[in-house]
Length: 451
Image (cartoon, rainbow, N blue to C red; front, side, top):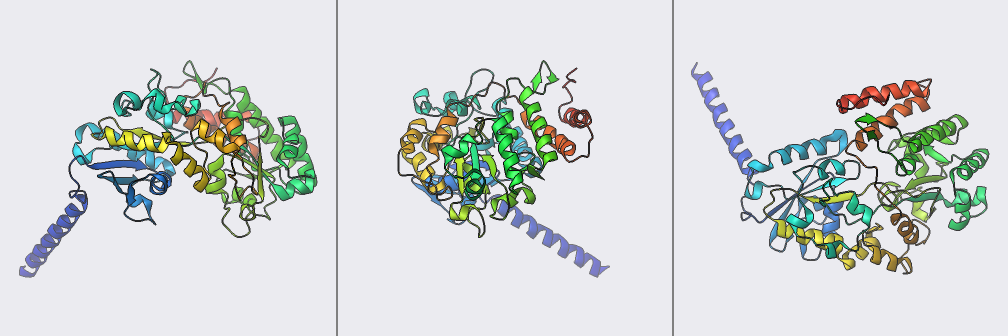
């Protein structure tokens, strides 16, 4: 019995020690003066790296891990990173925003990031602050930004709820060696003639097939080109609506799959990435600057990009893909320093040009990008080509008349259901559509069938 009591006493002591250690760990920001901590939520290290590499006066704790934060103008920057997978980032962010009104001082969330697929959700939320009225940015500050990047984060009342350092117009990224082998030239103007519209694009796909290549890697490669050019919204009068351009994607992708014009892959799968390598046999991908720089394995041996093997041209239609927006959280006690960061990272021409030069991003500053079209800027990945003229042309044409808060769910569930149609798991489109409806009503139960 005495031994048991001793063991219980020891366990109690250990529990108290663990509790004290945990408490110390949870108060690791206690050495930061109240009101001097800037808390930023994110899903990856992209923005943290942009601050580390381009924001003057920002000093990082660890140059090899930007997410460890640093100091800026007397404030401590703290990043809270949660991965996007399985909606984990949004779930954690929603929880933090939901508790914001009960927090104070250094416990408050000051900034958070969103991406294009779900930015509208936060734009319409009261938890996201007015960039002008609360943070203090002015129309003059924002005058040089591409209009669509502001439209994307403007709520139904006309209130701007975010800003971005990047714009993401896309182009058709093609394999130069395959272009020379099949089309006789890898010159962007000549390649454009072979992909100028969808009928010509399909004819070129047949030529690629005959030469032993795939025009595309998979089902999703043209999806955003079509979906960015819709003329109606996913939801109309509370009912699901499939735009004519979305149906064109279904019809084209079914044809391309049956005729072997693609390799039957899905976005981000290992099979989809095979075309990034010289022996992958894929002629083209559609994407913006970040896809080339972040995703196409251009620093890896055997990749197309490592030797400058990609080129870029306009393709059949203009489109955009993605983008990251900075938001101020309602209730932040540091709106002044949030303004400083937003102003520097999205409005400072010198910083934005530096981002383009060093990171091969496309910056959200129209005059700066137009000036760099005729500069000596070039991309090694694109064989020394300056792609900014193509991006500028695309960015000026982007319109967001049809975005809704339902877009992420509708796009993802529709594509997933159609994958099963393309690969033969469903015999008809109608069967695949029924699966889509079932899935989408589980996410958005208030929606009604289209008929």
